[in-house]
Image (tube, rainbow, N blue to C red; front, side, top):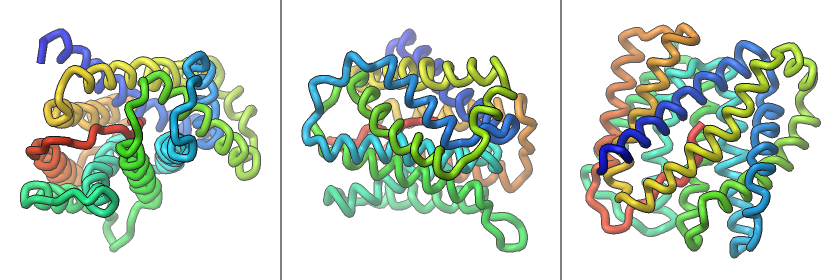
Length: 293
């Protein structure tokens, strides 16, 4: 990989990590309703990418399903989880999406799991379990939402794998459209005080919202798709492990996340498992199509 492109990937991972931490601040500290926050984010994404809506990707039902899972479902569950989960623990739990994608590829695409991927799945799930499991045999409710987010993103990635290649900005436009409508309706039905909480947060909320929609979704994801077009996914996937590392570091600095021995051990085990999966030999690897928070 050219050094310039490596620096671009480092920048993208830092943006994704910062997005995880800022999203936690929005829904966990400023108490902006998560569905409302997600709906506004995708409204801005849709507005920015509106010229790329046409031509309509075919089949329509599949792009609607992919957009609903990767956009609405994944982000809604992630923001719900971040109301109570720390950015650091969420960054580790979301790594469960990698073995989930692998297992779904076996069930839906007929791919085979070799011993290295099997070991990676076991290590990742064990590490995630260590992180989400609380003393007293309790599971963190917030991290269960994060695991749901990982599953929605993984299923969306598998469905996207079955589609013809879509230009990144066209994909972003349709994710924005498909996600905005149900999230807006869900927020109107199940949340209260949306505009009041946003107004109380003030201009910092507006800044985070614009950062989340334009810098993270439109710019960072488009840059990542550009890198996928130039380099093999087997090369990029291990390097994207910089994202949870950046999230953990930023979480400690910004939101005061606490790193104990259990968190460190679980994180190391999960990331080792993801690395084992990502480094597998494959002639047609599944690109990481799901959105990053």
